[in-house]
Length: 372
Image (cartoon, rainbow, N blue to C red):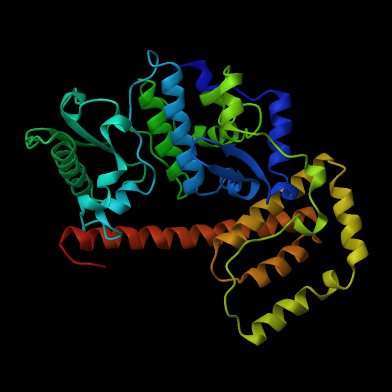
């Protein structure tokens, strides 16, 4: 495996990453991909925190950069076409069993693919990689095979028979995840390693390092993709905006979806935050202290980011409640923050486990022709 894949960040890069993930940068656009009009804010990048679920913006930007990497050095990387993260759901619907080719017909052209579909296959094989093994591979592989037949017919006007092609749910020696939040990370590393024509020589223990490696929104966004290509990097990102230009009022803004909440619930949360709201001077002093960047304060800030992500990830609290709860959390001591952070992670993990169980159940229903 190339040492480039596991190359550590230098001190300057670590400092830039820390700056990008500071709470004051949450609402700023840290990375702009001009070719696709994708803007990535600090808040969006929070999905790269240790227990975050990768969001579609980060996943799709990574895939775009993989394609640009291939274009820069076509002799080094396998020629691939990457659909974005919405493709499969659009093809088969939310249930996974409502296949409609016309819904994705315009997603490709011969120009986009860059080759004749008839000649592109080499092993006559459909492969499916699942780090968590939660879905029915047969249904997915059949849908992909049907899509390929329809795509060749539509773009080339030819009928092909793929009934003899292998449909392989890859299981042997496949790196597996041991939690419920690294799905996106495993998917991207499957793609990254495969496009390098490398064996999938990584494991769960490597995921936290890969997350750290991905947190470079400045001099080389998504490190292995843009390293040593300074000219290309200028078109990929615009760097980190000076954090000092951020107003105090926007430092910890949460863009949670507001929901109707009973007055009693509002009052209960309001009471818990009374001390914070009545002492603005103390709040300003505490936030000024945070800007000193001592190791202890940075540690507390990291935990607050985790807690804020937890608040945003759950639908139980309204945006109003999230803001008040976060204000109170900022007043707590580091030890208490750590305790609450662990508790939030545990609660979120339970919520994610329930979602996974629902997905598995829906998949089972779909496999017998019943809509969940």
